[in-house]
Structure formats: C-alpha cells, structure tokens
Length: 393
Image (tube, rainbow, N blue to C red; front, side):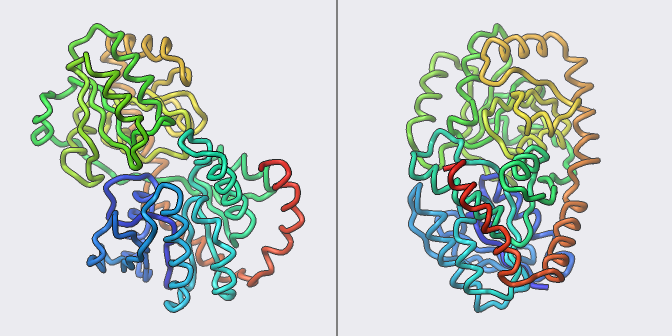
C-alpha cells in the first residue's frame, strides 16, 4: 500500500504537534511495509533530504506567509500526488483540508482520509477572513473526506453535533521515553527538579502569559523554563519577554528540535510541566511530559483533562489566581507531585502508544480502500452544506 501525507510542514520536524504526529505515524507505517510519502516545505525541511527513516520526502515550493503558506503548498501537493498513484491520500489539519475537493477531482479513484487535529480558527492570531477559511476547511475535512479521524473524544462529540458524522477516534500518541540526566541543558543554569517547564509555540492561545504572571507572584528559588518561539512574529513573544524582564528565574530557550537531547533533558528533569493553554487538540507536548514521568499541571479545557484524566493536576482556564494557588500547593507537596508523575507515565503507556495507534490508522486505510465509492460518499452529505454554512460561518 502507498500513502501520501498532505498538510504538514514536513518531517523531521523542529516544532509543531501536527508535524510530530505525521512524523511518528509515517515512520511507524513505513516500518510495517507501507510505502509512505510526506510532502515538505523548504523553509522547514532541507529540500535535498529525500528520505527519512523509510519515508519518502517530496519538497514543494510555497508562499512563505502566515496566511498562504499551508494553502499554497497543499495546492501543489494535490497536483503532484496524482502522478505517484497512491492508494490513500491522508490530509492533516483543517486548513489544508479546504482543498480536499481538488484532490478528489484529480484522484477520483483514491480514497481520502482526513485527520481533524483542532479547531485552530479559535486561535486569536487569525483575522476574520482566515477564520472563515478555516471554518470552511473544517466543514470540508468532515464532509468531503471518505474517512474522518479525530484525535480527541471532545472533537468526536463536536463533529457528531455539527456535521452528523461519527469520526473515528484515534488519539495522538507518544513513544516510551526514559528519563536522562541533565547535561547539555545545564547551560541555562538549571538543576534536576529545580524548574517548572512550558513547551510549545509562543502564541497567545497557549496561555504562557498566564503562567508568567502566576510565576512572578511566587516566592520560590525554582526557575521557569519556557521552550519555544514564535512561528510568525506578531509581538507576543516580545510581550512575554517584557513580562519576564525583571525576574532572572524565567528562562527562554528559544525553539528546540523535537528530537534534541536538550528538550529530552528538560522533560526528564522538570519538577512540573505546566500547560496553561486556552485551546488544544490533544497536546503531544503534554503526552511527552507524562511519558518522561514528569508531573503535569494543565488548564481545565476538555482536551487537557481528557489527556491527564486523574493522573495530573488542573486549574481553571485563564484564571491566574487559581494557577498561582495550584503552583504554591504543588511546591509545598512534592510527594503528591511525585505520585502523579508515576500515574501519568502509566496512563500514556496504556492509552497513547504509537504502536497501537499506527495499527489503528492502518486499519482505517484498509477500510477506506475497501469501501471507496469515488464521489459516492460525498454527495449524500451535500444536504448538510446549507445548514453548516448558515450556522458556522
């Protein structure tokens, strides 16, 4: 079987949950004998790199801007994929899924699987036009794909309510990580169990400003390490650095390669991983922290609570007072932190294994091939289009 992945920035990746997802999935499928093709963008992955751990890489040009990057690259990928005669086309994210119709026209005999990662139009970085485009992409992802995968149970509920489609629940996964000692990351002046950790892109919806404000209220010798940077500079990172300027215990590492030793050391040696995000799909960084046996404190949005279940701590979303109180409580109760770290490790091992997840996706591919009806599955869904456009745009 030959499968093409469309929508991601590329693999191997320096950052991005979708990219980590595609990397882990495609590599494991390749190890199972699947001929996997992943499209990449030259500003993220060296265009000379043609192979990565068994996955064929195809670099295509794009328009390197915040609003046109994904769409331009997806357009060219839809044109290119036809000549490779793949058995399944797998779209990732709702933005690129806006062009599923083009892939269907050019490849009427090829089933299209789409993975719905998050309602990213809820991020504050998008203007009105981009928001409408992403909502259309969401509708396209759900209504025009032959088989829909959702990465969280909350998204499954949303899809069923909005589009009357029962998406296949297959979550993000995480490898089995082992703790490693602090060496390279010591350059930031940190020690084992001596710091809180935040990992992710520096965008407003990640809520890092809540964390900095809460940390500034604490009386502690522990440090706060913030790993990540802005993908498209819009002033948010500058604002964060200004908030942290008077506190020498707040450290910005910049962006770290997702496979780097420095990031592994941070996950392994943090006292607590904190995720104050307002919006998530199912955070891979959160699952990674749990896999490294690091305790987690998250905002109480459904996707975060789904991930940790009873194996972590939470605070009220956007509530700096509550976040501050939870941080104080956890500073005073290291035994509870240690116990939840162990529970988190056990939970990801049981519920978020990439080996199990990749098998589930492969089963979807096989089902998609067996049931593919060309345009047949799309036309019955046309009757929902008017309702969707009226209600959600």
